[in-house]
Amino acid sequence: MASVRTRFLVGATALFVLVAPSLVQAQSAQRYSLQASGIFVGVFGEAYEGLKSGPGFEAQFRITPSAWSYGFGVQGSVHSTDDPNFGDETVTVAGIFFEPRRVIDVGSSQFAPYVSARIAFLQQSLDVTINGTQVTADATGAQFNGGGGVLVRLSPRVNLDLGATYGLINFGDVEVDVAGVGSTKLEGTSGNGSNLVLRAGLAVGLR
Image (tube, helix red, strand yellow):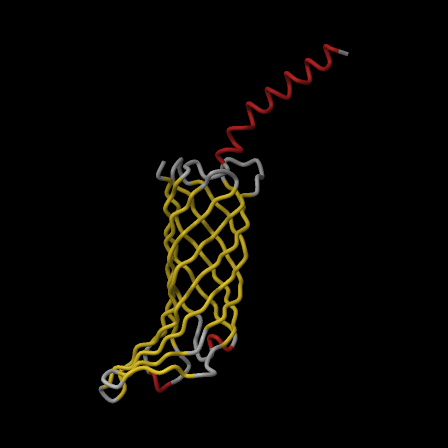
């Protein structure tokens, strides 16, 4: 009986030694990393009324102490409008975010899927010139998204990150500022909406 137990322990130890490196490599190899990504934001609901889906960019600093990692960053996207009166003018949606992730161990040293959440504080802004007068309109809101993706190892320090999230946002009332006149808040212009964000980027480990 003792010899069976001994062989079992030896075998289990050997298996762990062989598999453990791949489990570690499936996650971020460095504790700190920087990531830059291109994004495409699909917009829906009254919060984005009159806006079309559009491209954007995000950058983040990520800390990876374990299977969990935590990202802090900035994001922005540009959206054209459905209103012909605005011509080629675009609306910018930009702000800051916090994104926790949890890597799912699939025993691979080449890729690792993950689930994620995101809390963001964004500002929707439009700058136009009407009859020679500069007019700025903006509204701020909070966004809550959930989703996931996959990390693909390209080198010991570089990962390809492919992901998608879906979530909800609520913008406050629009504040309009007219150059030389002043600013005013348009009551009743707040709204709820949703968005689908597709992401592709590179994460570079620092150390």
